[in-house]
Amino acid sequence: LAEIASINKRQVDVIPLEFSDEQGESALQLTLVQGIARSQHMDYILQKAVELGVSKIVPVITEFSNVQMDPQREDRKIQHWQKIIIGACEQSGRDMLPKITTPMPLMQWLAVDDNTKKLLLHPREGQGLASVPLLDKSLTLLSGPEGGFSPAEVEQAVAAGYVSVELGPRVLRTETAAVAAVSICQALWGDMG
Image (tube, rainbow, N blue to C red; front, side, top):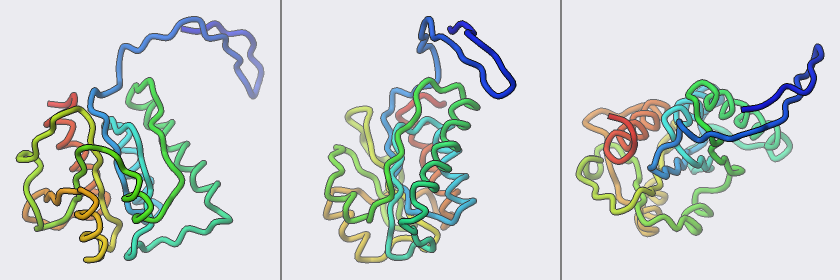
């Protein structure tokens, strides 16, 4: 609830009066760690993941990533992603903006992830999501880029406590896998279904 203080051609100033957190946030604290994908695919993943209720997004650079992050343009890329996140929050009626980190190498993320439940999307390798026990309402979901993960990255993720899970008998595109996995997690442990 807010009061309009002033309006002109380019701006509306409002004074916040009261906050109501009545909708939009899932009880499941889901962190999506996403191998950076090509522009339109990454945009789609971010948009749909936010609409589905992720609370944090960590873009990671992997061995088979098709996208090279240019340090000169990293700030603009993050600002672009932040706009997508804001738009997705507006679309889905979320009260809180999910945090997005600056892109980092996958190995750097594996060293700092302290979640108790960590799932690695790995086609045809692992158990189905429905067979994974979730003791609390917090998990990390690691999804690869277009090229998938290298065998060394899979090995290092498993050594860091990730459990390999699959989404069925078909190999999915990166944007399909991330959205499907987030949807399944929300249906199993979150607020969907």
